[in-house]
Image (cartoon, rainbow over all chains, first blue to last red; front, side, top):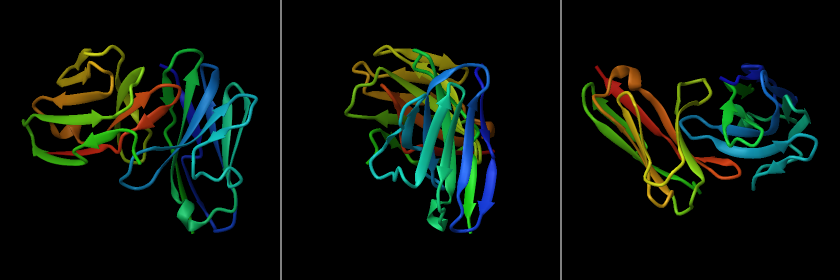
Length: 115
Length: 108
């Protein structure tokens, strides 16, 4: 099946630093990628939809200046958490959708811990 | 506010028991998916249901999509400790929205 690689799997950083998370579709071109956030014992909440070559669409309540999304190619989307704070600590998961098929393939997630 | 209401949120049962998880919404979906997620990992797709009234079986798991394509259920027969995990339903239109999840624990 299709593979989505997410990197890093875990990151620990100091408050105030920026962290970049990469999401790559390894064997297919992803016109659309999605970023989710999952707090402990909760479900996945959609943060933003990223379309290749255009600006991301953010969900209500998600700060676009804090969570910068770049989808510069059909196989790579990045999420940068700028000036991270402890409340940003969470499990971030990306997914990629292939072409016209409404099937999303998920990455393994990134555990962000902000000290 | 969750677009999809999933129940129960927590379920702890003994090995061999049966269980049903429900996923309800006021919205119509083009398809609905069920996922299982282990701690620290991304969700893994179990099944996609597309047609209203559709029933799909995956070994001891039975998935049903409501006639109106607004709700779904997951039934597990003779649960095993290996079934322990977080089960998520997700409604699909242009994007995908997840239910709150059902955390299942099957005790040996």
